[in-house]
Image 1 (tube, helix red, strand yellow):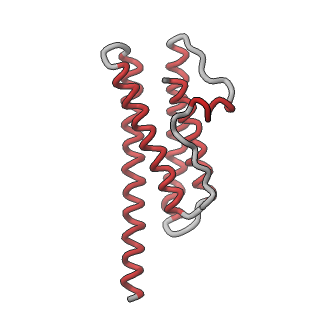
Image 2 (cartoon, helix red, strand yellow; image 1 turned 30 degrees about the vertical axis):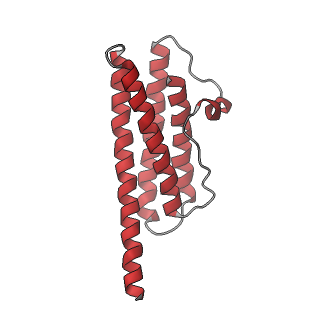
Image 3 (spheres, helix red, strand yellow; image 1 turned 90 degrees about the vertical axis):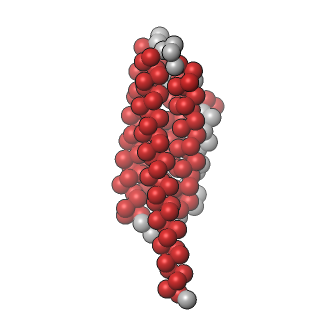
Length: 152
């Protein structure tokens, strides 16, 4: 489970990082720094997961080619750079990550306190990311509705 989470964190990091770089459209200047912050947080999650794997005597994934095989969360290539599409892709990834850490927390609750606490810590950040993205998508939708009213 932890190596799957590790693969997902690396893919999430890249999804956020590259999406922020190629993103186009309204709100880009507001959203880009936040996506880069989310990317950094995903990288920090990978650090926590690797440390826990090692503490448990396991071996973390050693080859990036393994990430897509181990990951249950899909990496979505940002072929459409429109800000709304980038955010929707990241929202899908966050929801998958939320499920991952809920599963780890349930599996370790009462059995492995350190892993449980790590999962809850990461879960809380993933929930914050989901809320951020949902708020941006709502703001973008309001902007589109306001623009339509102006055109009428």
